[in-house]
Image (cartoon, rainbow, N blue to C red; front, side, top):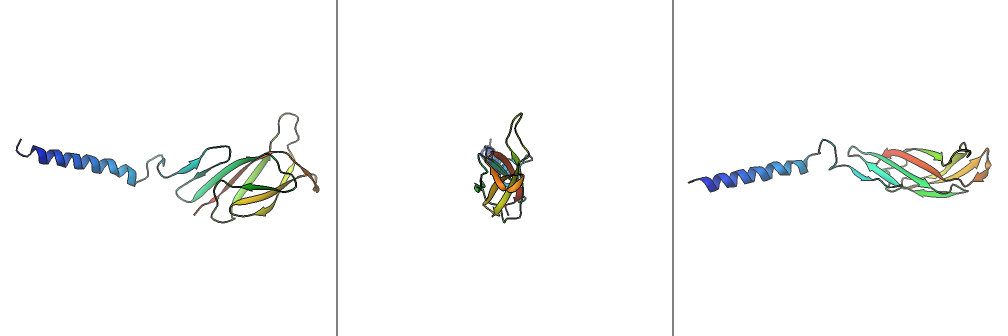
Length: 131
């Protein structure tokens, strides 16, 4: 019993020190270093600099601006879009990017030739870097 309090303090210090290691280093599933927003317009931000974003626009019309949930490092990102349609809906309409920045894109939907437009809703996915 003579040195019991010293041993108890040493054990408590060791337990606290070991429990704090998990907050300093990335967990195996990266849950403490990944930033994400899993909504309809969302993103997944990886610690190595990769950024994936997605969203939905209810109109492509003549000129529609789509603001990204968070900004990319620059405008060097890849983006793909798909027209929203169900059974019997024409889904081969084109969407053209008319302006591109790290925080948004402007698009217009075209049918056949680029002079006629459509207002179909569409989904988009963009992949780039955030740092």
